[in-house]
Image (cartoon, rainbow, N blue to C red; front, side):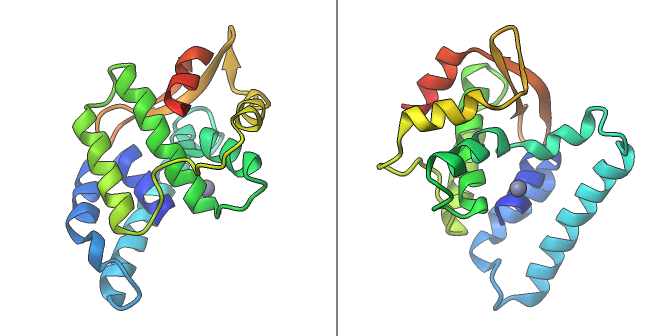
Amino acid sequence: MAEVLKIAVALDAKFFSLLERKAHDITPAHVRLLSKVIATSVGLKAAVVARDERESGLRKVLNLGHTLGHAIEAATSFQLRHGEAVAIGMILEGKLAVTLGLLDVRDLLRMKRVMDAVGLPARLPARLDMKRLLSALALDKKRSAGAQLFVLPRSMGKSAIDVPVPPLLIRSVLT
Ligand SMILES: [Zn+2]
C-alpha cells in the first residue's frame, strides 16, 4: 500500500482521492476494490517506465519516499518493513516539500490520514538513532553542491525531481 500511495501522490491526484475515500475498505476482504487499486497503480507505473525506458528523468518520480525510506531502513537495521520505511519517508519528504513551498500543508495532512487508515506509520520510531540515519543519508549519491537531491511532491498528484535540499533543512524535519 505504501508503493500504491506513492504512485498516487507522485502522479495522480484523482487516484489519491479514490484511495482517500476508500482507505478503510482496501483490504483482502474487498477483493474487487483491492484488485482495481493494484491494477491502477501498476498501470500508472508502467506508463512512466514506458515513457522513460532509459531512466533519463521521469522515472525518478518512482523514488518518492525512498531517499529517506532507504536511510530509515538502514538506520533501523531493517527492523521496519520496506513499505513502513517508505511511508515514513514520504511523510518526511512531504514536510520538506511543505517547507519549500511546493506542497500545501493540507495535502500533507491528507497523506498522513490515509497512511493511518491503511495501517502505515507516518512517524519515525522513537528509538531511532539519528546519527545513523544522517550517515545513511550521507551515503546517498544523489547530491549537488552539498545539497541532497530529492523527489518531492509538488502539489497532490505531481512531483518535482532533483530538488536540492540543504542539510539543515533535512535535519529540521527529522527532529
Ligand atoms: Zn520501494
